Image 1 (cartoon, each protein chain N blue to C red):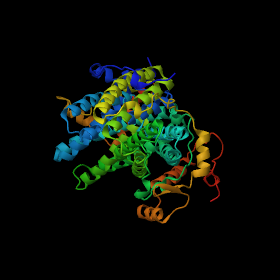
Image 2: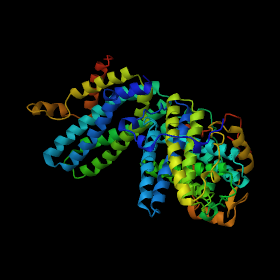
Image 3: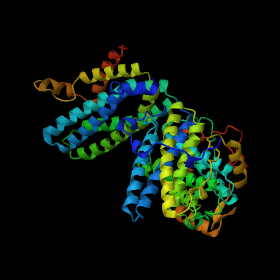
Image 4: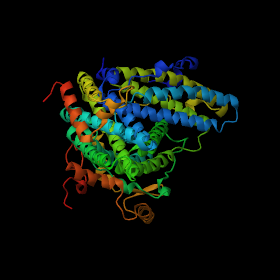
Length: 402
Length: 193
């Protein structure tokens, strides 16, 4: 059944303000919740955070007070939505457990988007990035075992494998090589625009999270690992944001943002396993439909075009959290040695890449390498969760000859 | 009600909330010792020795064994905490022998303060949440009563009118206070030797 969010009516904006009592949501159980419920919460927090900051950014470029007031009214509701969503995360979970969940999002969301993306250049961008998030998951899982004495399989619940991807130290590229070509707003499929916005928002929130929680650690190895991976998340934001056509007008960007929020809440409403959380996705979808209607009106008035010329006439297939093990193993086997050069990709280390590596490493091993050897020393083994057999890349197998 | 809801309601009575509050008292007491001089410093330091001794004993007698028993990975968590605790205990004994009037006292107190607060934060982050997540609420409440019994064995702050008696109870090296606290806790838990 098709669902055209432009034709649906949501909750009137004046009725969307919530009381403190309504915002005091009960968190999910850290040990018993569906890991993909937690992934959907983390994703929607990233989407709402982007919505808030995009709206602030737009308001700063807005000459008209009436427009700024309109943006402020919707943004207040979005700020409440962000609270209602992100406060579903339990305080009983440790920061590292939440971090591992963030990386599970990055892996399974990016892999799903890569599988569904119709444009080959954009697909390559997601395939490239996912192998790096996959490796971050493995590094943080080792830190988790080392300082909390817990195994990450309790968090990812066997849905996502934990093993080396493209080694983290090789993600430190010359910043110039992180910028991709953008899609053409007039030629790109609507789903491609939604994918770019979704992954950009998710990576941006991951960057925000690491840059703020990293210094709260006492252990030097943890502080350093958050710094190192935090720097890579910034590279990822550069990588994904550059996919978006900068020629879109502010009104068009606002319309795409609101449409994407409808798409994701609708997707998660359709796929959520926890009925209590499903009701929140449904409520927020009904709020977003009104935000979209208001954005569409502003778009018609100020951009002069019909919204249906820009966005899809019906929502695409729902974004689904599901295991991507075989797909990831295929990518590991074929793309692990990729790096970027200019806006493209190569399989060997080039001069600019190597110069950057020398500049940040100074011949010392970074935290992402030390965390594996230190955990192996402390726990007697490095941590992996290989549910589908040995690593597809022979040189990255356990107990490989050294 | 979900397990999570139950544990949240139990928060005020259970041993985790109690120990976290003691961490905060310990932090304040360090500041008080540092700020005081002469007899006032000695008096504040005796209270600090007492509180640390009772607190660490309660953790060793009640919390750590239970974490080993019920928490997955509990042995590793407790081994890390004991390593931190043993370092702090040694420092405390050294400081106790040195005495609060020694010229190097404040320098050594600062080392102890950092060690104790790092250890406390590690417990709050890596050990206590598992008690709340996996522990039996009734058992956690019973533990609070036992820590309170140990605390009452000698008050941590002087009460009006009983200054001299209090002073006597506060005296003694950390190890002696720990022994008395251990007896009080075992008695309260019904495991007297």
